[in-house]
Amino acid sequence: MAATQLKPCLVLLLTFSLLAFASAISRNRIKSLNQIKEVNRKGPYIGLITVIATEEDAFFASGSFKPDPKFPFIDLSGRRFRFGVVRGRKVVYVRCGEGMTNAVAATQQMVDLFDIKGIIHFGIAGNTNNSMSIGDVTIPNQIAHTGLWEWLNTNGTLDSADVAQLEIGDYNVPKGNGTNLLGHIGYMEEEYYSVAGEPNVAESLLWANISLQWLQLASNLEGMKLEQCVNSSLCLTEKPKLVVGLRASTSNIFLDNAAYRDFLFQKFGVSSADMESAGVAMNDGMWMQTSLSNGYPVIVIRGLSDLAGNQEGDNVVSKFGGLAAVNSVKAVLGFIRNLPPITR
Image 1: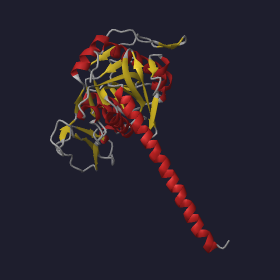
Image 2 (image 1 turned 180 degrees about the vertical axis):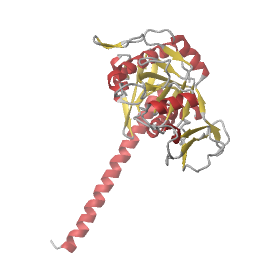
Image 3 (image 1 turned 90 degrees about the vertical axis):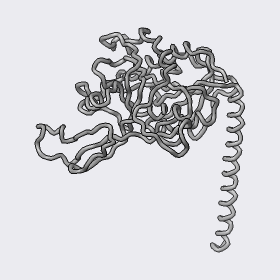
Image 4 (image 1 turned 180 degrees about the horizontal axis):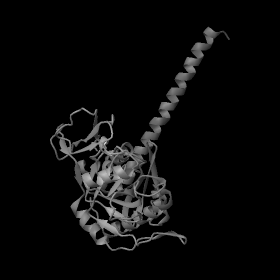
């Protein structure tokens, strides 16, 4: 067959392939929408969101999650949303993946598609407070996005509205020796859009306040027994504790630097640092409005897995991350047990 005859055949074959592909996508989408409709008839649900496999493994290893026999899961946009019961409460569970973008996308998808009445976000975090220890569980009352910066030259002028300032030159060794060309960083407030606010009008927001009623419920967990040992040969020196009402920070940074850890604690008073909580807790399309701007109660429960750079040698998250995840799950299960009945 001549090349001029072959081209129309290839075009036709490609057209049929694309049509078949589009048809398959359409059928899958219709199937997913029908499944969503069915599972929502069984609602309402509490949304559960973790980040990484270590946290998910600890959750499923607890044996508390009983999958729905008819619709155990629905796969959407590459994520698996699982449906079931935990401690007598109907739940939708998803692992969002690391970072703010993943946290926002998964949470917004959850609240848009399913009959959700509140969200529990849990997992592990770095410890930025010297009065806290690895293995402890923190349930913060406020969360800030501390990754929204304006980064200026040395002679640049910071915006007067910035809530904090980091002078990189202050960390020269020896101090004051020469000029640090990295300049300085100003910490900006977020533009916050909410269903309770005026459309298309943003408010300035630094701290997102966690739902007061749920914090009061969580306070009943203080004093609960938490795991102290990873195994028979690796244990923490002190019994872990659960603390309600501290502050937390979120940014797209895995924090493993003692100087910056101290800066965050001194400037913002935060006791933990992670990469997702603000994205879950506060998004109608922007980073940090998901649960709050959609009008849902939310709580964040994080086990402290490492010292965020304040250790000697390498970070210990690989040693104690699993233990911290187990302790966060214990707190989650206790919190769910204390929840009042959820109605439509």
